[in-house]
Image (cartoon, rainbow, N blue to C red):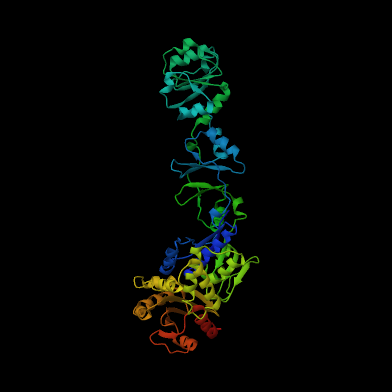
Length: 536
């Protein structure tokens, strides 16, 4: 069963990461084992503190939800070595219903070529000369179901030569005359003796025994016995050629597991091959693709937590099947093809909602999971000082702390005392960064929660330089950085954009692209609504 990914937004904070993990744990606990937590971006230092504190690993990181080759039910026929005989290759092709070619691989599993029915047919049609090119002795023994009868065969590695079926001796003009011959005969002592005396390359006894006196002859001829008659053996021996010599090995069109299905469709329409080899990231063959596999691709499935805006979600979301949305932000622009379960509540943390979902199902989170959920609520409500915080957030965090047997005060200090000094301005700016589109305006708001905003303001010039670059790169109307100080219970705002917009939105005159907003702790409740009201 393919996984159902539970994921937060692109620049995940602690609430986003823990919400994904908690909801996946909830669904797995009730028997839905395919749910898997994932994240879309770098895990912050704060979140790592929480994960390490309670003994969890960060969720798997995913980069897109585009439908890719590995999402298709492609075929996995046998992959053949270049040394496999043409006869064996043909048998494999006959067994593969609906597959017109099979991959031929090198010893390390990489692609050498593709063997098709057309390759075998063309080879058989070109055998008019009756001359067998050098082939391994083991291949000949395999196709003839034969065995070597003399010591000379033990010193023979390859066989080649013109094929002769022994005829009566009175037809001298049709007899074999060259040492470089492969002679097939039945119980014909005279022909056998002639071949051994000439030291032909190989003598193949078809449904016949070698007379004792002939067995004692000194000869360099490799003697083989086969249960097939001479005419069938004459046809089969050419099937001893290795498929590496007849398969198509140049001009092949290949696809990789990570290739997007939409891109592959374009290539398939262009080249119109019957089937295409599929390779993994190490260039090793994993299967074959036909046009049939592209008709109804299997879409990835995802549950969104802590966001419901396409610009904040995983790339390729439009190609995925969204099953649920669990969030505490404003409703945005995500659309679905079918009705889905949506739970959106006006609380300060997504984990408050998920804790309620545990309760709805009569379950209690594990001690460690409850501790992480308490930490996530503390983080998203800025230790209950954010205006988004509700009484329900406080009660839920206290309940989770009791289950985990931890102190909320100590947990909060541990989270927010994490040093930010060693992190680069770029890391800080994009750690909790979100894009918005309101009334024709594209803008971005980044937030850094700290306990010493004056120290962070010393890096203002570096922040402004990066923000100007990002604004120009994305053609934004404005970019804002919130330095939210837990101890001061307010936010130092750094921005690039129109001074008049900032003054009208917040009623404060900015100075040098900076202003302090006392009591402002929340991006979604105190920054975005002000800009929305101004631009709306």
